[in-house]
Image 1 (cartoon, helix red, strand yellow):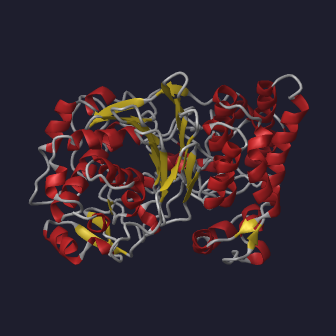
Image 2: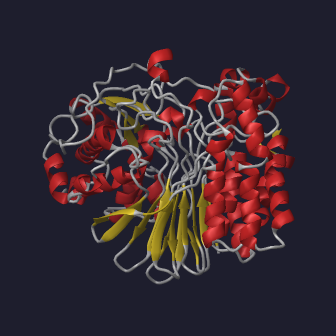
Length: 581
């Protein structure tokens, strides 16, 4: 079978992908925006390690994709530290303010978590980036933040996807004068080709760098602490809290000053000789491991890549795993998540038996009964359109073999920018449930159930792969398909990310208002008319995406090869790019 037939590109003979897989011998990077990839590569070229480069790229994503990624948002990270031969995670997710009344949304907001400052949780990304630098990096905040500061202060050229989203959500930005001043300059969204400037955000980042410089005479780590304190204890914190107090928010100085990201071991599972690593069940990451465990016993190659039977098997697996996610996943500091049971091959085999090869589940199947969790009777909400998808991603591998994988996120259109800062403090409360009885229900100090989820995988020969994508509930579905493209069908990385893709929406959405679309299956048109017809006959409510749909995710990959070379790939569905040397 040819690579052309596997990718579904329908291109001229000999063209396996639209872009080449990037190869290198020293270092590689792949990021959700080309300017972030460039910033990360510059750090590597100047002697920084993968952590320095990853933080530099992550900060740039918060500037050049600030409709999808906020500097004051979330930033879950997973790292491989070559010298220690260790995989660790940095949670990068904030918690609900201490002042939250857990019944407020049920009592006063009709069971919804409204847009605006009430859905704000403690910003975690600045602490995640600085913690990564302090513990595992080699450079200062000022050094890694220079590109982000420059793109905010001097601007960057507006590109099609960001322009499209700013136009789509123009009314949302217009609700708040502080947001309109940034995202609707001159009273309108910027057009493609305009230079987009975020001067307040540039000053905020520069202030953190200046505070670091004032303290750096003592040590690099002391300087980084000063940059962090500027955000969580100093003038930035005071400005954020004052704005929230004036606008009915709940954040306090104590919430910010006491916050600290978690550094935790990764969750892992085996699939066909490789070990896949994810962050903990405060995010959805382990669900991908559960999907792979369920598919371990399926002859995927025998079904045929993207055949009707193959797509059906993956979609039904996704539904079963998301049913368990809905019942069991939540902040493990508040919720007993039975991860060992969910990832047990015997449990996976039992779940797999619920897949009928002749008929699709018409809705989300029932969760497995593991004696815990909470059964929630969700009202099925009909949403007028699928929500916009937030998040970005970046992966870095350096010459020492360190591997960095991070999925920074948080939109700017559902909560106001804090006047004078350019920041929209994390609105990730949108991924909690208003009902405190839900495993992911609200509570003071509790973290929402996060969709952003970075991954690492280690092959039997020890070589690592880093991968991730934006896409909300599509993230794990896109990554499942790409990983199988690599592992089962042997595609080169770039062909693997470009192959035609599909996604189910037959479960409660992770974002407010948690709408469900029973049976909905979106498919890129180039998957083929026969598959679309067959899947409808199996009972899937098929909706056709245009080819290269940005809602299908934007998977980025960086990986080591057994012979010691490196590869990277980036999804053309969004402005992602891979670079290396």
